[in-house]
Amino acid sequence: MARKRKLAREVAVVGGGLTKLGLFKDRNCKDFFAEAYTEMIGSVDKGIDPKDIDAIYVGNFTNDFFVKQAHWAPIIADLLGHVPKPITRTEGACASSALAFREGVLAIASGMYDIVLVGGFEQMSKCSTEEVAEGLAMAASPYEVAAGFTFPGVFGTMATAYFAKYGATREALFNVTIKSHNNAPFNPKAQFPMTVRDFMNARIERAKKKGEPLPSWKDEKAYLADPAANPAVAWPMHLFDCCPISDGAACLLLVAEDMARKFTDVRIHVAGLGQGSGYSLHAKKDLTSYEATRAAANEAYEMSGLTPKDIQFSEVHDCFSIAELVTMEDLGFVKPGEAHRAVADGMTRLDGSKPINTSGGLKSKGHPVGATGVAQLYEVWTQLRGKAGKRQVPNPNLRIGGAHNLGGTGGTCTFTILERR
Amino acid sequence: MDKKPLNDASYEQYLNERRVMGSRCKKCGALALPPRPICVACHGSDLEWTEFKGKGKLAALTSILVAPPAMAREGFGRNNPYVVGVVELEEGVKAVARITGVDAKKPESIRVGAPLQADFLAKGEGAAKQTALVFKA
Image 1: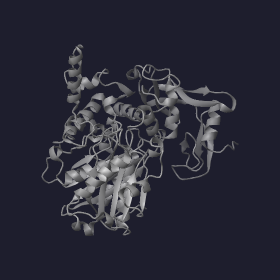
Image 2: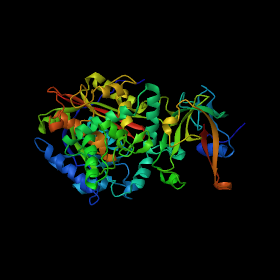
Image 3: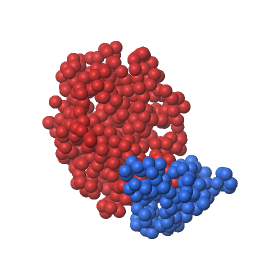
Image 4: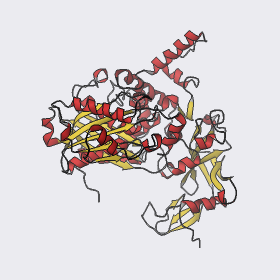
């Protein structure tokens, strides 16, 4: 019998750091993590003595493969001067650092530790695109890889199932991409701080300079519908449906709620924490849903006593545009089959009734795989502190935000709810 | 009685014999393809082999233009895309597989729900022989 989940001790988020995301071939993941950590230390309102950190959890997916170096946890402890404190690496593909966050929360809730650093990092740019594709495919199921699926291919397959079931078209995906990119210019950490219109205009400028015939796209949707501008990768997934290859790191400082006032007067705590697992594509009952996301959401809602309506804004894992639509439905933000209309109607815009991916999402902010889960929570934390600048959700009573992280092709999903008291 | 262990290796041996073999739970009747050692419907561990007819319909698909290294070595890529998909078999289970007999360059012309028939794509000889389950339109 499942019982109502709750933490034995409440946990607060009191500090955060995130690197600028992008391709940085002359730096490595130690450089990235040191940068995020330094920002985090400086972000704690009343200061933190690093000596007081009890334990560390870090997420990373592919360093064994991309960097040919395993056993990263002690390398990070050494880097930060935290040897001989306990440090543990978590791996859950693209959800690796959401698992680090979760382990950190549970470690404090258990009473074992009071102050825990959680984070994630990934270094991808030194590899060729083919190597990255091969590395990421390690997170798909063996049956999918054997059949010739790629990562975008698995999501493309789900998109055709969604289209067939609900009558949506690629225009629904265009709406997701355009919406997320509209937030990106306001995020100084974003890899592509550009709108889709910016991409389109840059292309027209390039044609002008080269004296080529000028393309005549009437708007962003026409640009995205043009295969010359937006080629297919794994139809119906095109270039602008896919998140980029990124480097970066993120971290957050967690403390027991009863001692949070020592660090800050802005009380942001973990209200809901959920994690679930999912089947391979062939064993899924429903090709238009992630059972892992549903399980994670149920756990987080039940623990927090909140409902989908209470979530005022959320980061969701848009590794591919279709995943944002499916996830909106799995999180209960809209009914199954209605996400494509909700996005078209503007619900998820920064000024909509439930803004999604205010950071620009993985598509435009960037997706350093192992850093993403904590990077999403960094965005939620930043929004709840009212420090998101021009991308701040325009709601003076912003109190509750969510972060959904999806690993692999949906095998590991988390949903975390942060609440400002 | 078939005593082969219910695992991936046995499944692959059957594919080499051009047979689509999965498991059936003796307790609750749940089917699985590839076979499973433990029933995920009732947690039962008394399962037996069952043969699938290989008839189904297309549930979802993608046409891949950026091919993984193994497919690129076979000549697939932007100028020679290929289709993979999810097939729902008559018996109610699903399989992921290459879809042949369709135009990968015009994926929008491929209909979800189209009837498909299992086919077997063999590579290598003798001990190195490996057979992939594919579905043709």
